[in-house]
Image (cartoon, rainbow, N blue to C red):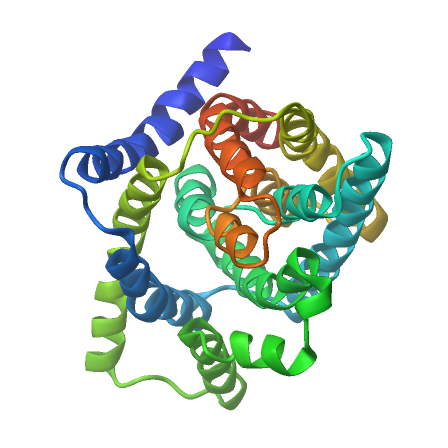
Length: 308
């Protein structure tokens, strides 16, 4: 078993860690700014990768429906666990909101997709891309609702979703596939070239973002909440994902892909929502840092389990 874990570590995690560490060093010592990098990711790399992958993906309507059902069911289960933990540990409303963000928002795009590509190949990436598009919609609707129920509005949530180019890329890809049309070969080659740059660049962005994650001296209540958040994200979320897929009858490669994506560390963007809506950003930042570090040890074991 140890040999298999080490093999997975060397073949999957080590290649991923090189651009992450490079990005971290650039952020730490060269003070590389994350805002222009995030713009590059959101408006250039992400839509190209989504468009390219969905146009070429070997997907069935059944896979898409199961992925959507899993995304919603798993989110609701994790939300319920976070609410229960908030009551058990007697957390304040902002701490419970932060715990909910930690429990439900995973780093499936700029960490998960490159990981899935290395672990399961192009077919795995095809299935993962559908999950990521659904997650983009959920983060900008239910994610905002979880962070600030009092400030949530359906109109602003819809506007937030449709301000992201990745959504239009997904709609374009879906329209072209339904009509059985194809992009001109030159355009397709250009989109594919941009998409090929996605993995190394977004991993470097992740490393840079990690360099700016603040380490706070935590108050006792927040420290207690951070332990709860890490337990939910690192230990309970894989079990919750397994339960959700058992209920929905998901199996084979789709099971493996969704299981790993649902077990990813806390999304770096969760701290943006936490800061904007005062959902205990200290708590969220702490869990982002430690869940990401722990994932380099936990994910190889989970990949070994599902691959076996």
